[in-house]
Every structure is written in structure tokens, then in C-alpha cells.
Length: 480
Image 1 (cartoon, rainbow, N blue to C red):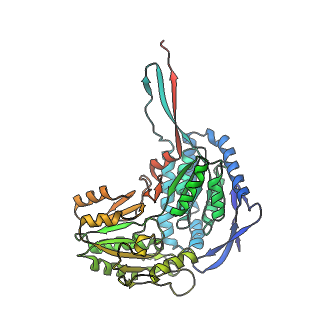
Image 2 (cartoon, rainbow, N blue to C red; image 1 turned 120 degrees about the horizontal axis):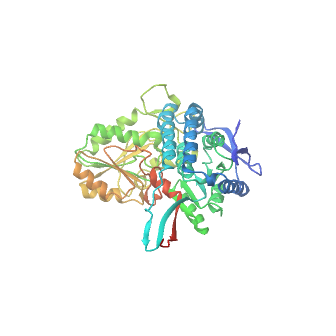
Image 3 (cartoon, rainbow, N blue to C red; image 1 turned 180 degrees about the vertical axis):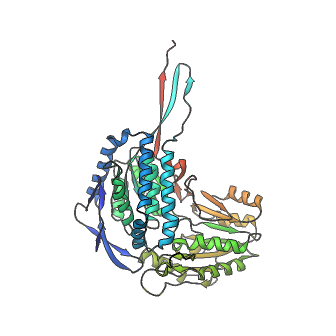
């Protein structure tokens, strides 16, 4: 049985009261480790350590200092790539090949991006906006920041919080998901060899730990990637301290496919974006809106794509097949299964629709056609390997159906009509609109949503700005 620890003040420590949580390997359903169930005292110790570090040497670092630290962090991730992949595979069941190519590579790139961004802070030009007075803007760190990350991309989401927080000059307390803490803790251990004690602290635990983190009076901001319900809880807690909240929450991405699209290419792109990571992605291409003229053809092509998807437990090295992990936990598997079990009679199950045989929480890639806008499976974020297909008559109805959701994180449009693509991208109420593709992200561009998908941006210089505060300095200037 493995033992996972908190990382506080640069040291591996257990919870103060000794409580632990069982960590389950979702590929087998068996407990393989324990992690701390941290309480308010543990959270407080971590924040006090972070505050001491911020008030000490870290608070006096230059952008160049922070750049060098982040470059060293990127190198550490690269050097320990195979180890981190093994840890993530054990914690999540993810396929090793895709985790190496689609997570480790981007993580290294993102840390390096934020290393450069640390030296590129921008603001209003200094000038005499009032006669006899010189004004300029300082962009400063917030100070101490808290973060809560989810179970679908434990390493990647930790990167999205650690990168901008450190680049801006903050110190950080991060709480990984209760089901997938191992890779974040290992990152904390590795980075403790680079950073001063207390700059990065990792506190494991469950929802009560996250609640203690969000309510703590020290952090100037708490950032979360998680469900809309979790985001509301963080926003409510931080409001009591008039602290900022940074919310990257759920999604239910519409994928609008017009009748002039390349159906085969669209089906392949949608299947990858819908089934990747078993659909456990807030931007997953799970809600397809297809022109009536091509809906049946597209649905059949998606079903064919689904049948070619394989499980990570059967992964073959160097294979080009799409491998998907199990659902993260038994409760989520039950939720996904329930959405299919409760399908209305007008919906047509084309393929999949059941938990896989054997051990673990695997679910078969599923395509459901004939779905209507008010169906439970269309209205809710699925977070499982399910793609639904519903139809529209024209561009106006497509837009109405796409925007008719409380979420506003991401969307996509498949069409060969450039003007239509531009019209749709302007009118879609989502933080990201992909055209003839779905799901790629780059470090230079912002990621974040509207409406109940939250506010604040991850990645890009916009993220760095979210981790800073702006101060106006005005000085009287006398004539010579």
C-alpha cells in the first residue's frame, strides 16, 4: 500500500490528526494507496507557510528570477516524464502514450510559456495625465493564492494554476482532487527542490478540505477548476473575505455541423474530441447539432468511430488507436450509466450504452441519435464517453439550440462556408469557438467561459493578469 503525503513548507507531512483517505485505481476498482484527509489545521499551516515565503525572499524576486525557476520546473517535468506518466496512469487509468504526448508535452510548454510571460507584464504608459503629476501603473502579485483542481486532468490542471501564480510572483496552496492526488504531490516534491520552502504547498483531502481552503482568510484569490456547484461554493466562501474567485467550471459544448461540412472529417474530429479521456473533459464534443440533411449520415459515422475506440487496459505501445481510460470513480460511472438508462423513447442508441465487462469503471463509447433539446442527456454535462446527436433546420435554429444552455465554455462549427463560420463564431456565447476542429488548446490563447462556466482565464497573458493586482502610483513633480 502506497502512502501519499502533503507538501507543506517544502516537507512531506501527514495530516495533523492522522486521518487518511483511500485512493482507488479506477482500472481495477481496488484501493492502492492512502492520502491525508487534511483538516483546517493543515490548511492553516500551509497558508501560513505560503505567507511567510511571500513576505520573505520570494516576494522580492525579479521577473528574471521567476523565469529561471519556471524553466527549471519545466525541465524537471521533462526529466521525470516517464515517472509522472506512471503515477498518472495508476491514479486515473489513462493510457500512457496519450498522457505522454498530450499532457507532458503541453505541460512543459506551458511552464516555459509562463516563464517568458513573467518578464512581459504590461500596463498603461507612464505619463503626466495631470499637469505637475507623473503617473504610472505597477502590476503586482496578489500575494498568497489558493487553488483547487479536479480529477480529470490532475497534472495539467495543477500546471494551469502553478504556472501563472508563480510567474506573477505569488505563493500557492493547491488542493488536488480527493481521488487523484498522487501526481500533484509528486510535482510538489520535485518543485520543492527548485523553489524556496512554502512557495508551493500541496494539501490533500476531500470536499471539507477544499471548503476550509476557500474560506481561509489568508489567500487573496482562490482558483478552482471543477463543477459549477463547486465553483458556486468557492465564490460564496471567498466573498466572505472579499477575496477574489477564479472559476473554470463545467461545460456542455455544442458542436454545430452544417450540411456543407466534410462529414467523414467532421466525424473523426468529433469522435476524438468527444471520447478523448473518456469524455471527462469540460470541453468534450458531447452535444452534436447536425443539419437535418446529414444528421443520419453523421450519426452513423460517429457510431463507426466509436466502435474503433479501445480501452487503456488494452493499450499497445506505438499504436495509433484512440485509447480511453475508465470513468474516474464509481459514483461518476453510476451517473453516466443513469443518463443512458433513462433515455426517452424517441432517442436511438446506436452503439455502446453500458459499462464494460471486467474490472474497473470502464464505459463503452456511446452514440445516441434522435435527442431533443429538453432531454436530460442534452441539458446536462455528461462527463463520460457519450456523444448525442440532435437536428436543426437552419442556421438560426442551430444558433438558438447551441446557446440554449446555462454553460458557456466552448463550442465548435463545422462548415466550408467562411462567412457562416464567422457569423456563428460571433454569435455563439462561449469562451472558445473552434472552426472545423474541436478541443486543441495552446498556451498563448486564453481558456475560460461565460455564464455558469465561470469567469477568469487559464493559459495566456490573460491568465497571468488574473493573478496580479494593479496599483496606480502618482508623484508630484516640481518645476526645475
